[in-house]
Length: 170
View 1: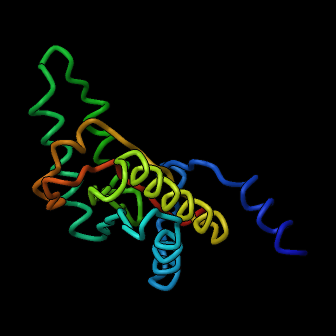
View 2 (view 1 turned 90 degrees about the horizontal axis):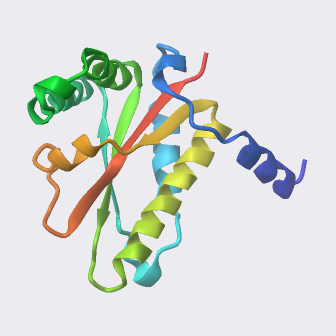
């Protein structure tokens, strides 16, 4: 099979696959590094490399789940609070093998939209590499991420664009 055919097949198979469908097995460190390396190969103007990723695994991932649940509870008016949504936040993070925060770093050298586009291309590279390795994944951008500035150590010129969930497929 030639490269164009392989690429076409991977692109056609790329889907958002949610944590409920992930297996309980761990993504190997080698594959995780391959996924993140592919992200850094995305085009970006003036070589600003505007993506910033933080990997959450194990205990850090469990702390992220608890923190996001606490934020949801704190910022949601009582009459709008949904126990199911609260539980889903924890379930999705804990069921994923790896969660990666997606942060854009605005350099001031190019328009902000170009750096957001570069980060989006980096995430697309992650999606495609996950697909090629039979890793389920999806990009979620809940409003709660705006409240994660401290735990993600987001600087003044940065913005969290969401979380990227990954897990092996059955």
